[in-house]
Length: 430
Image 1: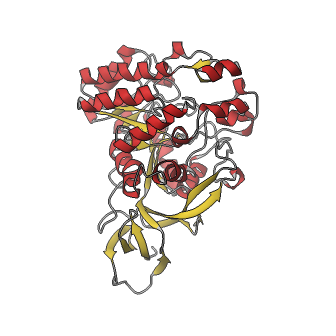
Image 2: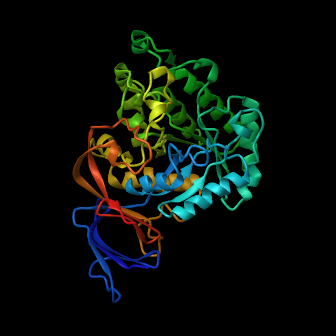
Image 3: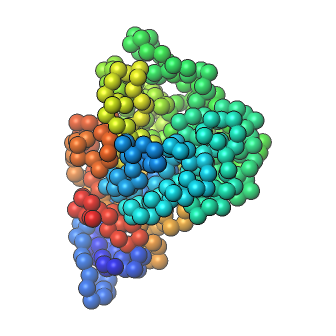
């Protein structure tokens, strides 16, 4: 294994130091480090060193939709975005609702080698919302599943949601809820409001998200389990989660990069690349989720990377599949929306995009401080670079990025997973 000496990096955007990586670990951090005989030196002057990013919400599509993404292509995109670990959502075909399927996804990640892949198991059989899946078997499998979600569909039945929260308590698991009351969103196409009326598109009201979050917070208070809210998107949702945290409840929440930056106004183009679930919201909602992320009400940024083949997006709005790419642009969007606006420091970015998601997902090898003895999972970022997003340059099999043609700050220069370089000079290392 190559020994790397990274020189002159700003650790979490602050102190300048060198890092020595050997045998998969950070063996020293400081200046004038003693090095073994043969070392590959990386000049990191002006670069920021962060712990490897962790994405708690990724759609890798395999098995079943390898035309949109595979574990290999998705983790390549992850590495280019600075991620060393991703959690793969269960809405595959077949659904990841058994030990066999989650182990398949886990092994595909190990074979790919670009990022550690942790499968998320489905809460219900087939994600149909009628019968609990084999939660215990998935937890005991080689994949050691600890997070469960029917993402893409809400666990709308309150009694079933309660049982799921109760069941995972036995092994400290977490239920991650896609908060969408289905009867309030039938045929919904975009955020409900004046603009949806003007455009003639069926509205997706904020209350459809907020009602489920409020119900599940109450259920979790009763059960005493772990609840995670996926892709929170409204001002009202932030307020509900903030109140839950004040009560000391074990409730966590995530926001996507696109909900930190983009607004419903983009739907006026009728370009399906801007169709997503939950939908893009108002400027007031964007400001609220930014504030929630800044003050810690929202725990993490998660990409909800949702690749789709061309035919699923290059069609009329009503027929298009919801979802956006996110892995390769997430850190740049966070820099633009949160760091450059002084809402977060780089150290707080490390907290929201590495430490906390790793803690929620219960993975000990990631989300560790950049110090001697920690696994060498880290990313080097050049915050001064300004780049234009070009979909054709993506490592993903899909091209449905909402940031096409947008100028964003920051670029991942290098990513290391367990001491092995997956990205060097901004390009895949192998």
